[in-house]
Image 1 (tube, rainbow, N blue to C red):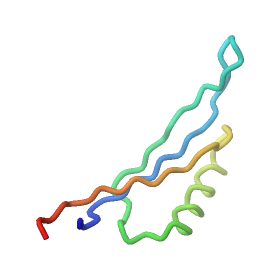
Image 2 (image 1 turned 180 degrees about the horizontal axis):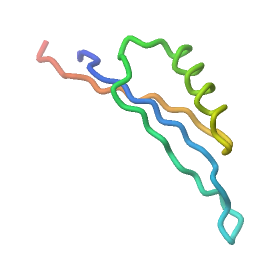
Image 3 (image 1 turned 180 degrees about the vertical axis):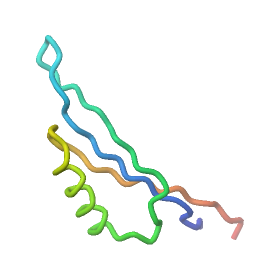
Length: 71
């Protein structure tokens, strides 16, 4: 088993379209999030940050880093 030591939050925004009509997606990452943060709190934070953007929020991801133990 491992111990969660770090969390990151990634927000994906559609910032435009290519000549072929495909979405251009840009990701904004926030590092050093408290690993004990609840998913609901991170979701509310993502919504609040997205409201400050002119671009459409299309995805929110949480990434956890674990320290592996030999147990």
